[in-house]
Structures are given as structure tokens and as C-alpha cells.
Image (tube, helix red, strand yellow):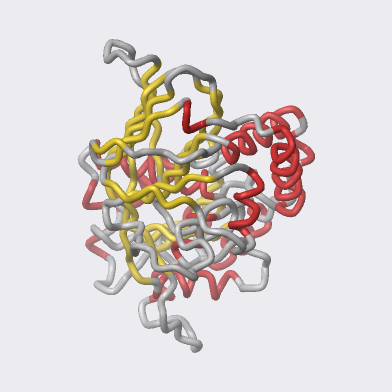
Amino acid sequence: LSSMCPEDWSPVLVLANVRSGNNMAQDLMGEFQTLLNPIQVVDLDSTTPYKALQLCTLLPKHTARVLVCGGDGTVGWVLDAIDEMKYKGQEQYIPYVAVLPLGTGNDLSNTLGWGAGYTGDVTTEEILQNVLVGEVTKLDRWSVRVTKGFYSFHRPKIYTMNNYFSIGPDALMALNFHECRQQSPFLFSNRIINKAVYFFYGTRDCLVQACKDLDQKIELELDGERIALPKLEGIIVLNIAYWGGGCRLWEGTGDKPYPPASHSDGLLEVVGVYGSFHCAQIHVKLANPVRLGQAHTVRLILKNSVMPMQVDGEPWVQGPCSVVITHKTQALMISPSKQQPEDDLPSGSASAQGTVKS
């Protein structure tokens, strides 16, 4: 098949999670199937990302572009499958990844320039055009190793982080939201409802202060240097610009100089928060975070307590442990072109969308 393809051919594969956010993916899949060969539009509820991405191995090397329709969790799932392709010697077939944000927070999508949430105001034809002419950018991915206790003979649990890690009030909000959604999943089919539930739990924690005195329970090291902590309730480790559903946390109010940050510089930004109310103030640009520093490696030790933690919205309750965050790899993403053409699709795009019809 690849020998029959024109040189400027850019095939597009659509991977949709019908369970994400506002449940718009089902309708979008139908619209994309009218524009593309149906084999190019994959429902991730019935096919794994890795299996779907095997179509890329039939195409010319370094040409395929993938549009992920879903939330940040769906994007992470697809990027994990791409890592698996690397491990299995298929690196030359790895696609570039764009995002159509259908989740609740969509912080990764927002960072990459695809917006905070798709509302149907852009046609599927325009979406495909934006994917085809989008610019390739790199995204750092990180390994989060959580080892129970403080001894190396405990087998660590390893997570992959694209967005952020946190311990404290925002992890507690994520945990409460997760537990509520598991109990009543039918209630969480709307992005507005999801954010309202988050707001409820955040407001409740302002009164309860379940994560107080974190600074006395944890040790923090940035690139091997111990950091003296002020009185905090939470620590957040950032890889991307946006956090908490649209807040530029590292930037804060923007009224004071702060070190530049990037999702592709191999550095993490580490901030502290005084509590849920402080998080709310940062959201509306009434306060700055406590900027603790930037580092290539972050190490935290939870000494003698049980605290909520989360990685990219996956929360859990954790007892005494060590957490080590190190660079894992980089993913090739697509950001919208800074100069989007307003006319028809560029030359070669029609054949790109007709991918495997021949």
C-alpha cells in the first residue's frame, strides 16, 4: 500500500472515545465516516488504541496523523499505545497526534492549542483541515514511581504522567469526583455537571481542610536539593501550562516575573498551595501559587500520614511512601497552525482523507 501512495499524502486516523465528556463522540464518528473511509474512524470502546494504530504500519513512514476525540485520559491512553509501538520496533510508523477535546478538564488539549472543550462550533471538515496543516510539537512524558514505605525492596507502582501530579486538596477533589462517578455514572454525561461536582467538593474542602499541615508530613527534593516548605496543604508538579480545567497555575496572576516554562524542555514546575480556597483564588487570578522551583527530577517522601494523590486525574489514597518523577520520553503532537488557511484543504488533503479506499 505504501508504494502506491503519493509523496505528499497525509493519512488521518480518527480515534474516538464515546464515553468522554458530553457524549458527543458518537455523532462525530458518524460525521467523520462520511468524509473518510470508515476504517479510518475507530471506536475505542470496541478496539484498543494499539490495535487501531497498527493501520499506521501499512502506510508510508512518518506520514500518519491521528485525531484523538476524547479527554486528556483518552489522549494518554493513545500515547501509551504509541510507546508500545516504540518498544516493538515500529518507531518509524509512529503518527503525529492531534486532539479534539471532549473531556471535562482538557488541560492538555488547551496547552497544545486545541481549546478547553469542543462545543460543535467547528465543522468536521474544518477539524480535519486543522489536523492536516497543524504544526508538530513535542510533549514531555514522565515516569512517576511510587514506592510503599522507604525501602527499595518494595516493588514500585509506576504511572506515566503527561499533565501533572499532585498531593493535597486538588487530589482529594479528584478522588471524591472519581468515587461519586463510579457510584452514579449516569449523572456524569455533561461537562457542566462534571465541573459543578468538582466545585462542590472544592467548596466542601475549604471548610474541612482535610489536607492541612502537609509541610510537616512530607519532604521535597528538586534535583537532589532539599526544599524548605512553608505551611502548605498541597503540592502540584506540572508538565503543562494549564491545570484544573483551564487555570495557568505556574503563571498565576502574571503580575510578577516567573521563570519560563514549556511542555517540551525536560523540566517540571513545582508549586505549593495553601488550600482549596487558595486554589480558587488562583483560578480567578486573585493570587499566585507558591513557586517552589523547576527540576529535571522530583522526589517526595510522605513520612507518616495517609494523603490523597493523583496523576493526570487518576486519584488514590496513599500511605507512607516515596514518589520519584523522572523523564520518560517525548511524544510527537500536533498544534493548530498559527496561520490557518481559510480556503479549501491544501493539495494532497483530499487523498489524505480518502486514505485506504484504494
